[in-house]
Image: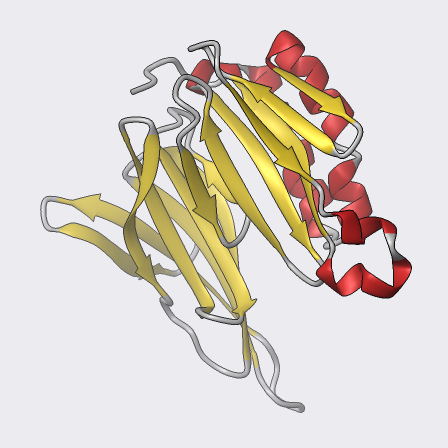
Length: 219
């Protein structure tokens, strides 16, 4: 397991990725790749429709865009792969799998090639040992949070929930992550007009018996 904390440059790379992904525009996400490949140096490359990742073991992984992406009448079957970040300190590539109307994200361990797949962009703790995924209007989960824990060279789901959900639409925002075992969130619940949105704050904290969410008046 990685022990080195992320560098400021790596944190900046992830912040830019989050900003691009928040636009929900696949073109913006794909524009992240040149910088991500540059930061990976000889560990990643683009060869036409193929994204190549090189493992420390000497093996490689290839992610190939579907040929339908080049045919306008078949764009609904298009699937593209784009490198959005490489976190060398944590041995992690982050790859976007861009489908016609949604995206998933694949974290690839650069030593083994083992994959962890997330339904939305995973935000990493500073240690790289945890990831949080915020789901909004997800076709399987709806609105919720997932906390993943690094186990060896993969991530496993450690906790999931939909704390303080209400109304017709819920938006979560991670405000602070001061340590692996403590995350601080804003939650906005939207209702049918004329009722106004409700804004609240809560923490998700890990204790001896697992993860718990607790409402807070403010941070």
